[in-house]
Amino acid sequence: MKRANLGWTGGVPAAPDFGDHYYSQEDGLAESRAVFLRGCGLPGAWRDRKRFTVGELGFGSGLNFLALWDLWRRARPAGARLHFVSVEGFPIDAAEARRAHSAWPELADLSARLTGAWPPSDPGAHFRRFDDDGVFLTVFYAPAAEALSEMDLAADAWFLDGFAPSRNPQMWSPEIMRAVAQCSAPGARAATFTVAGAVRRALGEAGFTVEKKPGHGRKRERLEACLPGTPAPDPAPGRIAIIGGGVAGASLANALTARGAAPRIIMEGPAASDPPRALLTPRLENADRPHARALTSAFHHAVSLYAALGYAPSGAVRTARDDREAARFTALTERWSGLSADGERLFMHGAGVLDPQTILPGLAGGAAQIPGRAASIRRQGDTWRVMDASGAIVAEAETLILAAGAGTPAFEQCAPLDLELSAGQAGLHAFDGALDHPVTGPAYLAPAGEGRVMLGATHGHWESAAPPSPGPARQHDLLEKLAETAPDLAARVTPEPLALWSGVRCATKDRLPVAGALEDGLYILGGLGSRGYAHAPLLAEMIAAEICGDPAPIEKTGRDAFRPGRFEDRRRKREGA
Image (cartoon, rainbow, N blue to C red):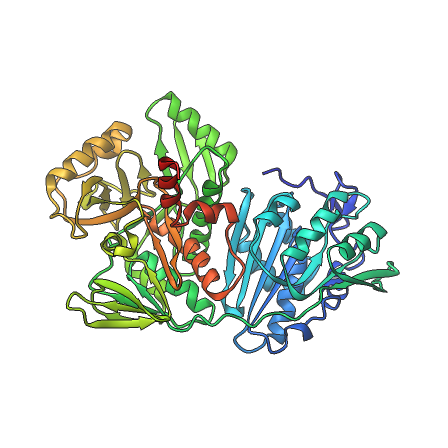
């Protein structure tokens, strides 16, 4: 993603390539409040609303978002949530944003929270949550036309804040304004600093009623616009139940609870994703594809989310097995943020080790738990029934989500999905010295407390959700694999394990997660393989957003890559149907 070429004029960021400043040189915050907040009728427009969505063209330094957030904190309806969905074609970094915000000490705490979770400069959608205030932020790093085509939202207000139309006409074209209207709710309002005739005409042709209003500062006039109609009432998903208490189920509970829902988790015994330690690493693909964008964004979102639960990245290192892999490492660093390469080694800076005993309860929060084993599900009218092996009803809900990990293939509704199971084993070993960060490769080695490491993990085809009994011989095989790329570390591992753990993973044949609606009121989050901790939180947000009628936190094409129906579509295509 091409980063912004910044200049500075008296502390105000400027874009030399466009011959314009990001905001007023007199007082950008006052301008934002006058043009965008008051121009969209805020805070009055969100009075008595449980959800309010603002779209923006031109995220820039995030100043408009901070101004809105500050107003929201002071005038938020009880229990309401605010969604802010923005577009930026030329991202700046967190340090540049902090410098821009420093002119307004009253925004210091909000600036620190925003820049502390600042999205990386990778292309695509980036999602962050600020739960204390019920604020949800999604920033699309892409040209405006591309970003708008990838959005799934119905905005109640729009901040049209691109560079001046004379310097950046593409941002104000009739096509862009039509796309803005298509991403708007009935009755949506839009505001902008410009009164250029081309902008007025484009908004009018898109269906907005446009009015000139007195301007702010040196600008004599500004625009306010409105679409006809009134917004539809928020959807009511009713009772929500989640089958599975591993990282997928806990992530779903987290995302739904943040939206004011009260999900219940049906689970039996310890979670399948509950080993002594869990490795958090990104899935790295040297291609800019929709699923690669989404899963890279999912990793960064997970790092941000887990930070609030005590996770501190140590970084992780992978050593190349040959020159070809070393060249791939270099290519990856040129494509994705958060990576660097040093000869034969790839450094993944957000990676590290998680403690599931801390992370899973933190994610699930106060979600109610229903003990029991879900053996089958059946729809009865508008309700999904969950039954145990004897046919007794365990739970009923209008919305049901399958997040059962290795137990997912047992449900007949999942038969069309290309799911397969694999067994894995890891062990705790004594270690000579200290290991600062995980080392990954054919086998991985991760810190597990003073003088101990976790060595994992095996992969073997398996037919049952019940894991095989762990055995020391498999650990010896892993130690040999570790020696292929990290012989010095392998020599410091005591071969005989102190403790062993085994589990069963569920993956799809195309190695992408499956997330979305199976039937009316029935959803699935599964096929996560060995990267559940990296991918589950954002995919859970995607499902929760669909259930609750919120803006999607992932690009449309990314969502399509994970949808359950893709397997049946491929079968039909192969059969010529």
